[in-house]
Image (tube, rainbow, N blue to C red):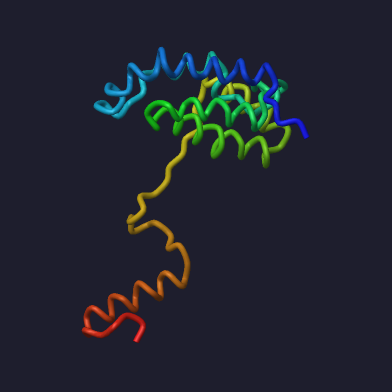
Length: 159
């Protein structure tokens, strides 16, 4: 079995690393302070193909596959999580759901703009302790109720 990384994917990883070191790392404090990635940086990320790494070229993607996507995201791990999170959420949660479950018409209609970074896929995840967050499991609900009851009654949880 050949575990060598193809030359084109090595080039992709080097390109991502150079971009992270020269363009993103200098912006870490600004992004942390403002809680916003500058729009020109997002545009550059789109122009370099970072939003379309795993997708086939026929849908506007780079065609780097899962390995290329992982190699690039590994380099994004060298800077603020804000940068890798925007790529990860946009690509893995957003565009990938259309790629894997969308109709051919939806893929052709939406993926080219998404993979180019011209549009971002909106995502919203509830806070962990949000009242609207679903409970992880019925068992967790029972344990939580028992713990509250035990505190009120002064007994051990689950008794």
